[in-house]
Length: 145
Image (cartoon, rainbow, N blue to C red; front, side, top):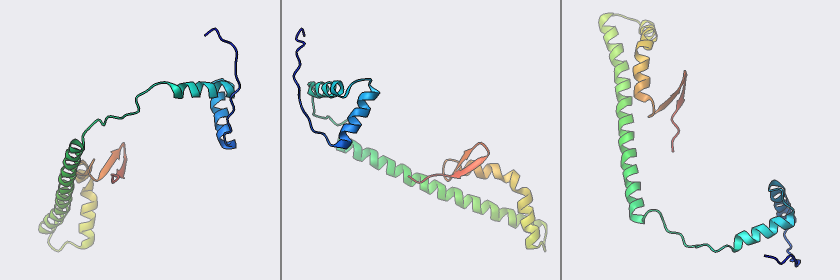
């Protein structure tokens, strides 16, 4: 392109638009005029504006149905684990009372408190990723999506 003659071209952006263009130009170490020229040329490049979907509607429906089935299975598993957790606690109380007839509520509570460390890992393992996220020593509820 040996032609070095230039021709003025005018545009009237809003003040906000111009400030954004000016900031973008500064980020690219260009004058606003150079930036406008570069953006116009970039916009003029030939490209195919048609978009081909990655997957068909049928494939997306199948994926959705698979995910729904997985969610239902996971929810059922969480319910099963919660039932097991509660049942195991009830079993611990029942066993303690059988081994210690006449035990007071305070004694039962103390037994549960004293023996929780041996049951805690199993409970956390059962809940991890389903209802609880364990990060080092900290536990957080699993976020619903």
